[in-house]
Amino acid sequence: MDKNLIEELANYVHHAEKKKREITKITAELYPELSIEESYLIQEELIKQKLDEGKKIIGPKMGITSEAKMKQMNVDDPIYGYVFDYMVVNEGDSISVEDYIHPKVEPEIGFILSRDLEGPDITPLDVMRATEYVFPAIEIIDSRYENFNFTLPDVIADNTSAAGAVFGTTLKRPESLELDVVGVTLSINGEIKSLGAGAAVLGHPANSVARLANMLAKKGEKVKAGQPILTGGITAAVRLKPGDFVSAKYGGLGDISFFVK
Ligand code: OOG
Ligand code: MG
Image (cartoon, rainbow, N blue to C red; front, top):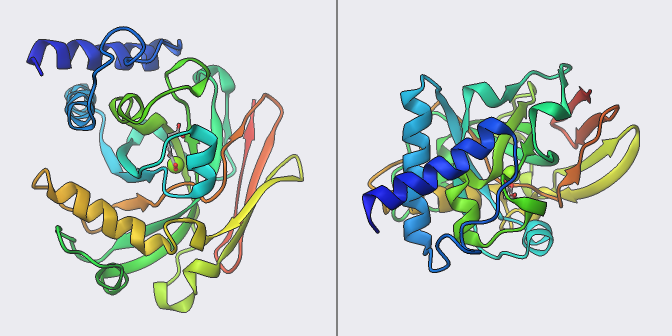
């Protein structure tokens, strides 16, 4: 794929994010033959543009790791992207829908490693051994594509819809919980909108981190110690509107909440 085209397509999604205006997916007309490998090249260029603007990577995120997400988005393979500093929302704060295109939220389980993990043969056990803490999180996703409609290469090029993250402050040692049976409820204005358990994420969220390490190894990269890692939405994502009070409650991992203006 030509370097100019990679740049042009990265600009296309980057501009949509900045202008908060939805765009037609890349595979619709611009470049229907976009492959997975090419889409990660566009994502890399997009990340580089953000870094060049002084934005900082907070940590990696996995996406499409649960059946609920695969069904909702009509795509079927785990993918990764990056959460940046400007996306972080503090617990108890407010967000404004005007700062996004059509934001949705999804509950996730996060990991922080005490040492780097370098694929290609990382196992979930390696992940558990290298994990310092697990924590609860709510991811705010905001596909830049019309109606959240995309193919796998489209969403990879769009940094996997990354737009916001609320990191919960309950840090637990991984062996103190059975992460696969940690339950979560996601409520809007006190009404439960979705629920699930850690096992929804590839059987166990540690599998998601192992998968991330093994995917990054193809690029000669690793999962770094100290960065918060999002393992993917446990449930289908829920659309936000002004006036919403969002709260997620986790078995043994505390609660997270924030307001929407
Ligand atoms: C893509 C992002 C997926 C997850 O946790 O599955 C994701 C999307 O659904 O727009 O972050
Ligand atoms: Mg997510």
